Amino acid sequence: MSGLSLCDDTAKLGLETVQTRVSASDGSGPLLGNTTDFSSPYTPEQQAEDDAHARSEMFVLKCYRVRAHGRSELNRVKSKHRVGWCGQRVGFNVRGVALYRRPDRATGRLGNLCVCGQSLVCAVCSPRVAMRPANEVREAAEKWLMSGGALAHITLTAPHKKGSPLADEVEWWSQIWTKAFINGKASVALRAQRAGYVNGFEATWSELNGWHVHRHLLFFHRHGLDVEAHRRRWLSQLGERWSPAAEQRAFSCEPVVLGTLAMYCSKIGAEIAMGSTKESNTPLSMLAAAAETGAACPQWLEAVATVAKRKISVLRWSRGLKSVFGLDEETEAEAEEKDIDAAKEEVTPSDELLGALSPWQWRAIWSRKLEHELLREIQAGTEAVELWLQINDLGRLWMDAEHYEEFLSSPEDNTEPAALTVPPSVPVQTTLNGIKG
Ligand SMILES: [Zn+2]
Image (cartoon, rainbow, N blue to C red; front, side):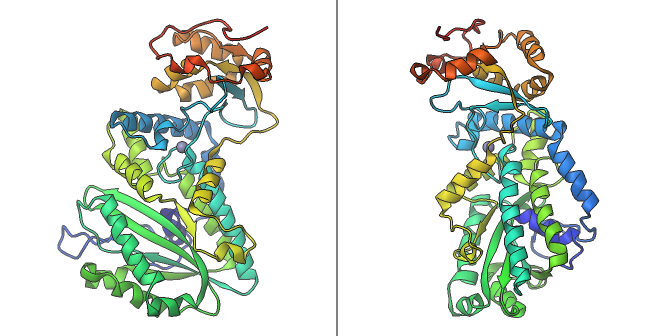
C-alpha cells in the first residue's frame, strides 16, 4: 500500500477530504502538494480494468523496459544500490538463465535471476510487492471491523520548500512524526485510543513545487477516535512550517467502513501496480517518462538514494499491531526479505521450459536493454527465440530444455561459471559448451 494509493483510494471512494495544494507562486500560501481528484468513486468495473491492465503484455513489458532504463541510470552514476542489479544478476551457483513459456500469463518468465524487492522505486518489483501488504491489510481490517473495532484513514501533509532535497524532507518528516505520534505526554494519551496503524509513504515531485511527502495512516482504533486531538497534535508539531493554509489542509481524517474496505484495499494494490504508467509524478512514473526517450531521470535517482539510505518501504505496520491479528511481527530485515520473496516471479505448473541462455548471452541482452523483447519471443516458442537470438547476433540457445535439466541435476556442475567473468564484447558461443556427457 503506498501512501499515494491510500490518498487516491480515499479520493475515489468519494470520501470527503481536503484539497492539498496551495501554490506559493500565486502568493496564496505555502506549498502543500499536488491537487488530488477526490470526486470519482473506484468501481468494481474500474478495478477489473486495472487488474486486466496490470496483467497485460503491454504493461508487463513496459515495466521491464522501465527497469532496464533505471538500471542504466544507476550504472551511469556508479550507484551500488540493489535496484541496479534487479533482474540482471544471475543467482549464486546457478548456471545460465532459464526461459519459460507461460500459457497462463501474458509474457514468458526468466528463471535464476535475482530481484531487489524494492516497493517504491523498482518498476518490476513494485507491482508484485504491492499485493502482499494490500492483502494483509484488507484481511486484518475486515477482522477488526467485524469484531467491533473502527478504522480511520488519516492523511498528514505539511508545507514544504521548493528545491528541498527529498532526503531533507524525509528527515524532517521522521523527526516530526516521532514528536507528534510516538513521544510526549499527549502522544501517549492519544496512543491509548488505538491498537495501531499501518503507515503508508508517498513522495511526489513537480516542477512547480519540488518534492512533496505525505503520510497516510490507516488507524485501527477501539472506541472512537479523538480526531480533533490528533489534528491539534499534528499541527502543533509543524513549527516554522505552520501557516493558516496548513491549519486547513495538513490533516484529514475519514472513517473507513466495511462496505468500502474491500474496494479501498483493492485500490491500494492497483494504484501501486499502475505506478509506473499512470499520469502522476511519483519517482516511478517519472522514470517511465524518461525511459520513453532515454533521458536522464535525476528525481528517480534521488528517490533511489533516499529510500536506500532510509530503508523506506511503501508500507509498514506499527509495532504490535500484527500480533493482534495472529500475524508474525516482522523486523525491518524480515519485512525486506518478505518483499524480496513477493517480488520473485510466480512459478506455475504450466510453465514450460524452453532452454537456457549462458550468463554472457544474458549479459549482452540486459546491457542492450532487450529483456522485454526476449520475454515476448519466449511466449511464441523455441523457434521464435532462436530466430530472435540470431537476428540480434546472440548465437543460439545455450542449452535446450532436456540438456539444461540434465546439466542442473549434475552436482559437479554446481560451481560458479567462468563465463560470468567474460565481458560482453567477447563473441557469443553458439554450441552447448559446458555440457558434460
Ligand atoms: Zn526490483
